[in-house]
Image (tube, rainbow over all chains, first blue to last red; front, side, top):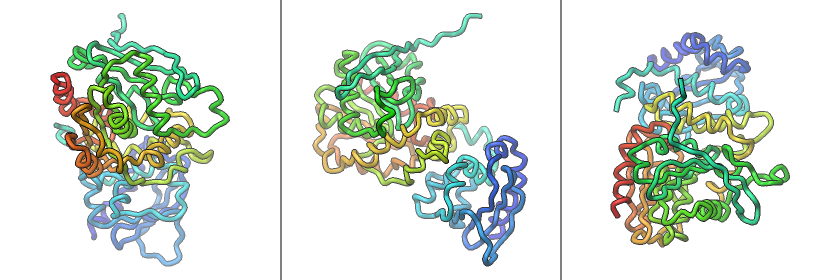
Length: 132
Length: 282
């Protein structure tokens, strides 16, 4: 899934250029794992900045929490206007195409930050997307 | 320059509910058939401000939206600091009936969203003769929980922030940012433990699956409207519920989520106006 890896790799620029998002995550300092299909990525965050994205697999590498998303579900999530059920991390968890494990406290205490971080993988919506 | 005043007026009323005195805030506009609006869990009546400000609706309907005790500008009852807030079916029904009596609403239409959409089913069942119709938005007789509500009220997580974040995914991606964030503000500002206390009703004390088949829609029509992006009360939940109520009408709304009246008022209008016209014509 090289396009998936490319999307994840682009997250750093998209997050770090978003001053409001970085401010929202200013108390976040941790590494979490984002696994898309079989491909793991370790995302290191410091004061809300996404400072490193390290592709896995890496044995014995610790993380605070992990988000696993099926490859097709991530593809759907990354659409400008995702289909119902693929538009939110918890929606995908309820659908059974994503799951979260580990220490959930930093995720829940900064939930909006992490939701918006993942959503930066989407193209910016145009006026037409809001039509109707 | 003088400010533009909305046609909406707000009042406080003193209501006795289950033997306790409550100071309850409500807003109203319009004249005609009373349309009593029930907000979602953890929020307040301002979710209905677009209906209150819609002249095509207020021409024929007296629209009323109140803040439940503990919510918005309504106070919790005296002694609240000594208890854990927990809404129940009985308390919710008595609260709505107290408002109806307090404002002398005759044969009102009751429209509720989410937990409000749940309680209108019980109201139709037990008090249908006193109502002209009920409208359940994001309404079902039961639904599966999708997170642990203990996250909503604990000292090391901001309750308003986590509540708003959790429900943010229930807003349709197409909904205008302006209204998405206004909707979330209701959660961001909610009192500690209030959303969790509402969800006690929603998850633990309102499984109506065995009862709703007894609703008499000839006496009290039931209209159910659910947004396609609502993964809390899913379209399947609503359609299953409607299938159990003989005569109920269910519609799945495109491009909307769990907060249709506040997240995208224009889109919601397309669905609610025909129903309000239909009710008026009965």
